Amino acid sequence: MVAHPDEHSASRPPRRQRSDGERSRAAILHEAARLATVEGLDGLSLARLAAAVGMSKSGLFAHFGSKEELQLATIDAASAIFDELVIEPAGGEAAGVTRLQAYVERFLDHVEEGVFPGGCFFVSAMSEFDAHPGPVRDGAVAFSQRWLTLLAEQVASAQAAGELDPGADPSQIAFELNAYMVLGNMQFVATSDPAALDRVRRAVSARLSALAV
Image (cartoon, rainbow, N blue to C red; front, side, top):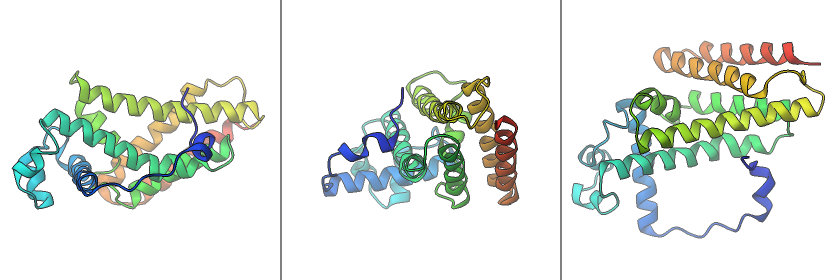
């Protein structure tokens, strides 16, 4: 079971200040995540990333000893960004339909705002590595499963609160809502037309309305 952000935020210790080295690494990984949504995680290289962030390849090598280490660290960084922009803010909403809709809206906002130039990092990563077994794919799959679990948990909460049909399968509903988001993300990246994201909003609203009790 994944803990909701609002369930443990009160007990979360204050964040310590990061060292210069940690800030440098975070900046590198943020750029790596941006590049990966355009060029692919497999397209990342220490040389390419060094040029993008204005560092020497040897300086970058001090942070990451291999391409796979860089890829895994990039997935972790993208996960932290997604948590900060999507999951944590939505977690402050009331459990059930309200939080579920907030997850969707925050997801669409981060796509529309161009947080990553190639759209959602994890849609990109899953598309790239779905047929390539290994730690990198495992990392992307683990995040995708966590996201689906969060959606399913809010469907279940809405059912428990009498908001949605108790006979519906939460995992199935989460799958369907996520499918709308994935397609909307792909169409928006390809066309830059916000109508693609509005269609997601309408599809989600219609699906939840059909389940309302």
